Image 1 (cartoon, rainbow, N blue to C red):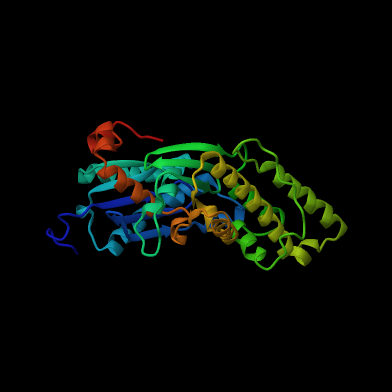
Image 2: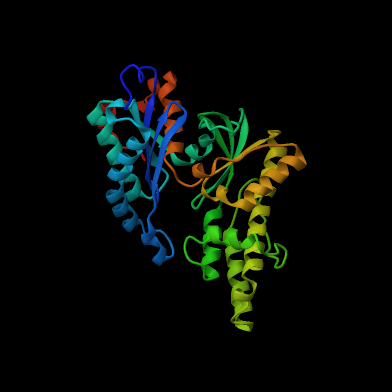
Length: 350
């Protein structure tokens, strides 16, 4: 356990993430991760997707042991904390409420600042966690944020100056992966399974039409429909079609989705002149997307940034780095972004 002298010049941020179905807590020492604990919820697997009510109840069960474990792994006590950061949104309201209420109560009890964090902003700023072997992007850069609920191209001019250049008009890329997997009869979550099987398949075995969307916006609903019609037609002719061609189908779906994403990123680079590209969000764990971005780096002379795997899916360390950056920014403290427990007592921000 640290003594008073060893913690004198340190900033310890406890971060809490509960936006969807993962209960996570992390402790950061300035911009370094001391612990990053995640409790997964297997209860949703039998339903083929996240059930909000079940998610919020599981968060209530998990949050105390997860926070306890995060502090224990970090080797500190709650009295050593400088501030508490939490996800204020976007996400499932019930899930967010569990994390918000816990964070607010803990900050009030310890009489330390409470810092609210935007979940998507955290996916982008996760690149600024100090990790050996990982470069940090320089401003300005482009961020491709891809998850189960969001698909965005963002221009990042500073830590807290970001502009959305394009976003999905309907479904997010993560949903396109998971719903396509569900059509094929793969268990939830199906996105990682499509990635797994795609590595053994022919990406050009089956052709799916890419949606035509102006500018830098995305659309994936039409692609999902095309995959459904393809499935219905082929299975009607051969009931064993999916089993016989599973790897090729997955590879073709993944190939199409990656091309959609890369076409927009190429367009964004050309439009802005910014040649630094970073990815974030749960879908950035996809091996095909990571490879496509690295291939583009070699082909077009971009500088690309791919986060450490544990910072791609929902986690609390990414919430912690935003909390730390806000905590040390005096301008943000003066503007109310960093709240004392007294100010936060009268407000819950979503």
